[in-house]
Length: 290
Image (cartoon, rainbow, N blue to C red; front, top):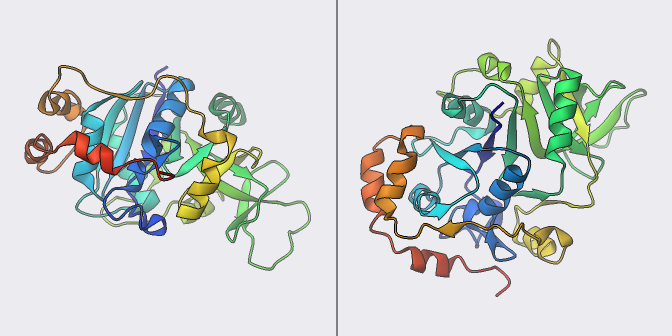
């Protein structure tokens, strides 16, 4: 069974400014490595062989970076340059680029954690969930409620007490989806968030939870949280980091993944990308603690 993942990386990175003034948040660095590198290598460790990455902000820089690196997984691009589709629309849009048949891992690019993806997959399959949400018991303004069976039951209103028989937990930006979900999502012609869809679907389908420790989990979506993660144990990266392709032009590399990317004006994007100076871009994207 071919394992696949969707990396949600198209956001504007507004909370990360000024670090995202000249780059997408996926290319902000933590411990010397981009957030995109970290997620791709983490999912590869769990056996994922194909990832779809959505793009919007600084899309050409994302195409340039992906096209010039050697990753441990095949990478396809889901193009949202014409319209940022939010989390729900992004999943629907990316679905056509998937070509496996097993559950799909979904990971926000600005989440860094030691969540056990293999255990998540085993739990997802054993429970028969349509969707399994990784959650932890930490403070959040958007707490979710789960019943005794771990099934999504609603949201916890702010300053409210947890009802009897319920557990409150915060979504961690990582989930596992059964492919049936894609057939149940609205069209991707307008942006929409995914959580309201899950809250509606849970009335008929099983939307479950996978509880993990919040100790080694970081949302690095702000400069302050990025700095906090810099001083944690989580920044250790596997020894196989992405490398620039030797003896291969950007144009050839981009053409290598072009069949998997549904890009509007893709040929023009490749031509423009091939003119960019990679060294200059990577120099600007230096580690944030320098």
